[in-house]
Every structure is written in C-alpha cells, then in structure tokens.
Image (cartoon, rainbow, N blue to C red; front, side, top):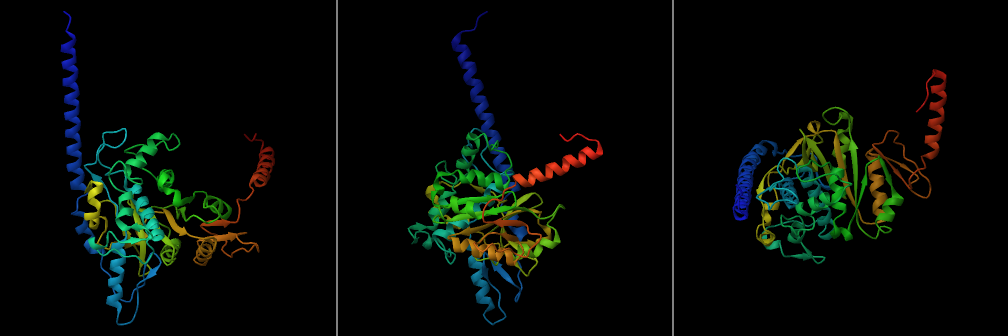
Length: 403
C-alpha cells in the first residue's frame, strides 16, 4: 500500500524535530557538565597557590616588583593591579553552534587557543595602550589611548560571530583551510593556533613570526614587518627536555625571560593543560593565567559593562619544575633597534646564539643555544651534499645501498 506524500513529509518533519530536540538536549547536558567540571569552584583551589612572601624576586612581563625597602606593600599592590590588568580569556559555554558543528562550547579542547589569544591580547595591549596601562574598573573602559579603548581590545576576542579574533573566526579559518587539517573539537598546538591567528584580516597592523625550526632569521623578520615599520610578535617554539617536565638546566632560562621588557609571556603546559605564563617569583615559580574556567558566552554589547569578567584576581603561580617541556616564548618588536636589543638580551640569558646578525659578523659565545639568531637564512644545500657523500661512502664500505 502506497503512503501519501503528505504522510512522508510529516514523518520527515517529525524526524527532523526529534533530531533537533535531541541535539538541544545534548547541548544542554554538555553545558551543564562543563559548567560543573570547569566551574568557578575551581578558583578556590588556587587560593593555596597565590601566597607570596616579602623580599622575594618578582617579575611580571618585564616589570620588577621586589624591594627590601619599607614600601614593599605598596609595590606589591602595584603588582596585583598589573596582574589583574592582563586580559583573561577562558572556556565558554552556551555559545551558538560553532562552524560546521553542533558544539556550543570549547571546554576540553580549546585551552591552547585561549592561551594564544591571551598572548595576542597582551601584545595588542602593549602596542596600543602601552605597558604602563592598568585596568581600574568599569569607569576606565571607555578611555581612549592612541584611539583605542581597553574594551575594544577585549571585544576582538568575544563570543559573537563577528569578533575578528574570536573562536568563531578561528574555527571558520580552520574549516576553510586544508593546510590546517583541524576543526571544531580538535586540540591545537601553539604553532597551529598562531597559524590560524596569522590569517585573521584584522592583523594588518601586526605581524606574527613563528620560529619552528630553531632559526630566527632577521632578514625574514625585516621583510614580514615591512622593514620594521609594522610591529611584529616573535614566537619561538621550544622543547626543553625529553621528560615529562622541563629539564632542570632550563629553569633559570624561563625565570629570566620575564625580566625582558618586551616579553609577552610563555605558553606552556601542566598535565596536558595549556597555561599562559606571565611572570616569575622567587626564582623558582612561574605566575600564570589559566583558561580552564568555564564562563557563559557573553553578547558583544555586554562586554563594556562586564569587562571585569575578563580579568582574574587569583594571582596564581606554580613551581617551574612542574611545567611540561614544550613551550612557546613571545616578545614584541617595534623597530630594528628593538629587535637587536631583544636578541642581545636573549644571548645574555643563554637562550640564543648570534650568527651574523650585525654587519660586523659578530658571534656570541653560547655554544649550545636553544635557538640560533641569523642575519639571513643559512644555505644548507652544501651541508646536505657533504653529509650525503659521507653517508654514501660509509654505506658502501659496510655493504649497504643508501636509499
């Protein structure tokens, strides 16, 4: 017996309605679950990690906050305000479905995207508002510095579809690019995340240069930044050991990096959780911002009234020996002189070795650097040829054919 077309249409509509209801229920359950797992109760855990003592070395993104004088309490208050002024970006729930997916949250997979966003937010704040800018509450949100206000920077990373540096934009880029081979729900490394960020059209006033092969090339930085006319964020991706935590011989490298005036922090991990490190304390701990707290999505128009949600007052830190070995260092460069002074600093703390970075062909004494700064990319063709010929000779002597 034939079914009428109207009956088939009704069945199809009912199935679609059931599917939509099931999806909505799944999203509701997920949001409730994430709100519990990554809820604000986790902030209470940090109370035991935010204790500080007097007369201990304390740095926050190039600013020193330690003294033996009687004004140490006032200086520590300045540190607290500086920490609180850094933009804090966290997991979100109750988002509109992300591009080409049914997911309404980035909980469990988006932490590296959030830490990279925080480093970028600090870079933009440093360029547009200056390192000395401080957030003092709602009344400060509309103050313009160089034509830009604080909440406008925060809004770039908002939860709405149109936010230029927000999660929707990054996922749209990932879904539309075969080179990334990443999508909603996938974990991103810092290099993957910054590759996405680099494709955002808004960044015409900033360039991003990533060091993935251990070589920082001045001529490439020069070209990318239009002869250093455009500010550039340099990110160096490093592997500091082979164990589950950073090798002890690198601890002081990380500590000293936060005394670099144009540092914008380090993206690193702890127990497979990405964190944004912004300072050092007592020569044995790193200060950080943690994205693993779930907040409900906020409409863009509410950001100016609720900017406090984008600032953390827990002042968290952890021992440097707990950090995983893979990390990404960031520093911002505003001119050629600024670039070279940055390299000089990194040489002084034994991060890098200079090869032909200046006209006088000077070289540093660091024989085992974590990365190398070149004036131009070295020619490796001859080196490969030499290695190949030696390998062929050795293989022939041993009776093997080199493939």
